[in-house]
Length: 561
Image (tube, rainbow, N blue to C red; front, side):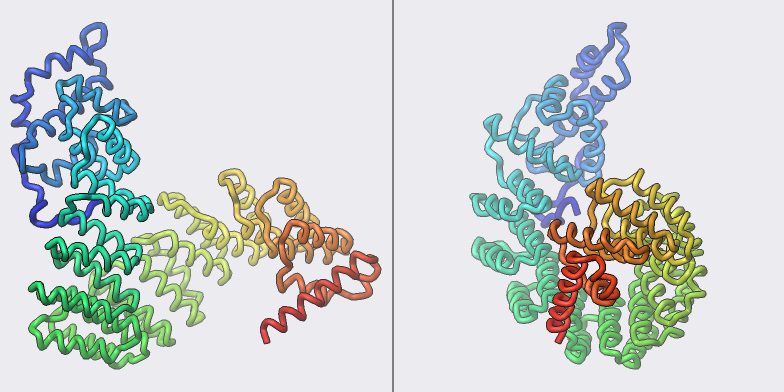
């Protein structure tokens, strides 16, 4: 969210169309055209664009009358104009010079306008630059300017500095407190929320229903129902009635604490107060019942939804599919999914994730290829990675590769988990040459390849009987100082032991310890289960390794006990 909803006193009012102002600034047009012309007197395309963009800002600034503001659509348009202008002028100083070239004198209103455009467009670095430049030009930032800088500081993760700006604001207004409360809610700073809330009330400002919803929602998510009821008390005192959203938030608070009976009781109280539950309220209650494995109660609520003529949405279907899968009622979960099509409801990434979980838990892996067919309806990277992982483990490496290629075609950039899913599948299917080709392609196209990816290919080579190739890959990664972890070393040591290169295995173990990497459980098992006589033949280094492994294994068992 680039900006917060404004209170009524800050509502942006529509003004005269921009073309109405063209006549008022017409005298500047000829001098602009001359200023941006080439030697032949014909304006160049880039310069002409910049002149027109500058004129747009001139118009925009000119029609801003006292106590009036531009509407949202106008600001969205100006975000595009200023974004293109910044490609030429680069800095705030540059754009101010460009505005001066079309007759706009730099004044406080110019900075406020630019601040708002940069803020609206998410150009946060330029917000800071404009704010600093405003101060250097001798203009004292007013409350609006401080509100903008405060919101941006919160958004870039500098809540400490934002709160400092808040405390130093001499004349905070409603928007000031709204920005602070909404942003503190996002970072779950309950102490900060409490302080800002008290300060707001002391100054005679009261949160609007939307702000109350934000605060209550975060309190309920944190399980702080006592504080939530205190906020409700304040809300009632100042005359704000409980909306369906507020009721639903409180019901969800009880649901999160697994107090399903209290959630159900609150729904009844809601109905008695004359406020009718909506589909979100009922979905929240159904989720509570499903989490408590009270499936019959959940289906009773579904019957109520049908009787009241409410239309089930995608979220409700996702809750049902996920809940039924978790308690082993896979057939019903699949039936719910199939009924979505009859209701003309498109699945999303959560639907597919839940369905994927259902298929795998029910061991019906033969359904995975069918799932792939309709996968790119509305998915994200997490859902794709889950499917890639399941396809690889279930023995469908070809489908995993197809999905990986389709991700690239759809512009969904794979990450390390995508690569791991495909590599694991290829290695398990003994298609090691294809795995190596994919691995080499990843090394060529990506930097900072993770230790897991190196380990998967090394392990795959070892299991395919290509231990020497695996060791070569490992040694190359050592020389390149690539990221390798205890699992990587464990796999490489196992490969060395399998081909009788025990001395190298012991040396690698010592090298690992010198690098500050602690042995894992798998390595301890390898050291203890390796033939003791064989290790003794390796001399002092082999016996030392065996003793280390025995000691570490005893410590591990002691920790478990």
